[in-house]
Image (cartoon, rainbow, N blue to C red):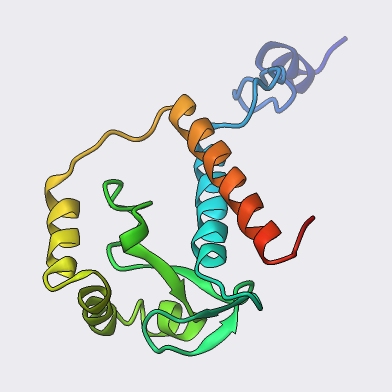
Length: 165
């Protein structure tokens, strides 16, 4: 004879707590979140590699310290949460961990450097894009295409630096 616990397990699944245990579904590929994370990682590699010198060194966009591209981070003037500027080359530059994390982007200096590199008013233009450009999250196809594009660009840059043949 079955106990109440055993009957509950039979009715409600293995846990017996009223939560139904669902059989594992076959995975149909990475989730949108996983694809998004992959794109962020690959874009970060690209941002740092494309700005690396022939020795694999990058200059922090804000404090101008040189460091290996592998130790730099991808800094953003406008936060990554703003989809309209998240992957704009003008908005992403190598930064040292101190400027990017400790100084939270070192944004005043970042704005000055943007205007020096791309022309007066660039920081304001990026802010306006982020404010005015409302976009939908990218589709699976968009993410896959962007990942493929940046992986190819990363490969070119790694060949240029002699990291791969």
